[in-house]
Length: 79
Image 1 (spheres, rainbow, N blue to C red):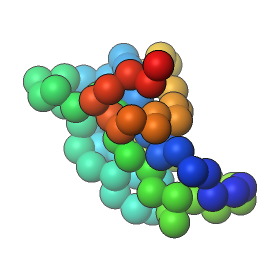
Image 2: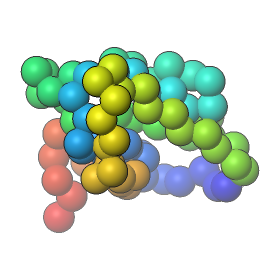
Image 3: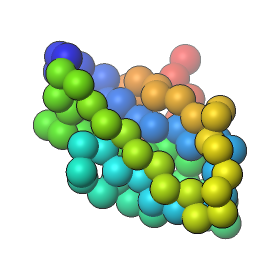
Image 4: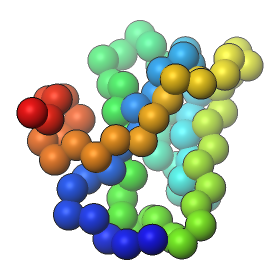
């Protein structure tokens, strides 16, 4: 566990609709209808051991999801 200089995001792939939680904090709802695929993980919510929970309403498994450092934010791919 450490505080990073670059923002950390959860990139949700393989899920359609649901909610994401980090250590009991609600990161927000996700739905493939909208443009958002990356969800910011505030460093102040991170601990030495973390629990990331995705509740997918249709029971799909978001196996392609990943954690990504994105210094340019959620909408621009880092060079």
